[in-house]
Length: 278
Image (cartoon, rainbow, N blue to C red; front, side):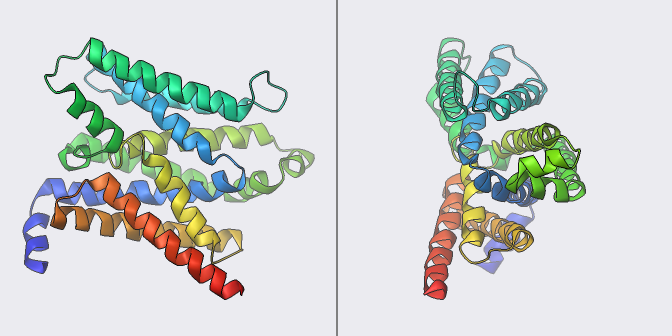
């Protein structure tokens, strides 16, 4: 097995896959705890479908760099979803579901009607489940991931105290003279960036798993916010690393394998937490 891994690591595309996989897993886990505690878990799934729809439009327009369209569309959608409060005519969860299903349907229709590929089903499957895209990354994709991941990590560290406050009590943040809406906006922007990056790793349908599972796993064991965030990041990176390794050795889909690793770890943590609590 070691010889097999050494052989594969000689290829640049495999090394790129590990770099991108670890970075995306780290960024998604940092924001996952906040999303779970703020009851925004479903927003990851909704934004991933929006990113799929934007990708379909970019494909139809034959854009050389699809992220030029996908990233701003996803960011704007994230902002709109997080700003849909209790006083809106369409509540936040309903708006998320509506936009999610609509974007997915429009994207799939566009890819079928305007497709220049002979294997539409394969292209859609790869986009939705990330079956091959992580292993076909170009240098520019890796550089883009490094830059955007650094932006997300730096923003999270710099705004950590404010994100912590907004997560538990927005009224307290407002009372201190700060704008809770601004920090929610920053959270939305970071979520959108992670979603767009994660499409190359696990696909549009599975990216929300990278956000939710590590957070829930760490919350099953710990109660302190900072400890939960740190443990969530460690677990997410380990699962991404193991998932990519297993997918290479067993020739399984990369995205699905990573999510299965996250699910197994969550089950272990959940049982451990129950036993510990008992």
